[in-house]
Image (tube, rainbow, N blue to C red; front, side, top):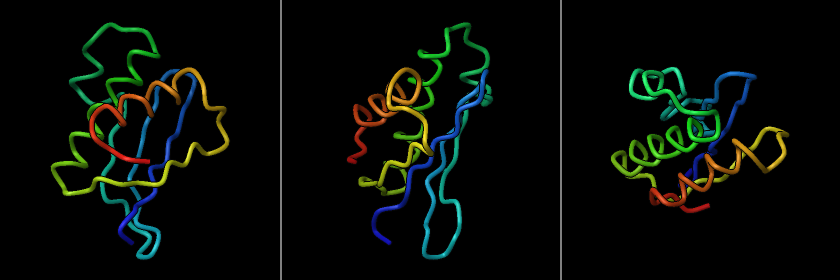
Length: 95
């Protein structure tokens, strides 16, 4: 309960992440590359994933969440998934 699951979904063009409380089955926070601040920037997909990681880390620290469990949903830990995780770590999340 004190460590929500940080679930990553990656499509061919977009990437999204959710913080999920598995005990209640509810999404606490979510963000994706479709939000206005990220979608307006013309960056490649790896830089886009970094921006998503920074945004989720900012939202989580504002909500008082500092520690999460990383769920990569079967995607290999490289490229966009790795850059999102690294940016979230830099933003203050621990996993």
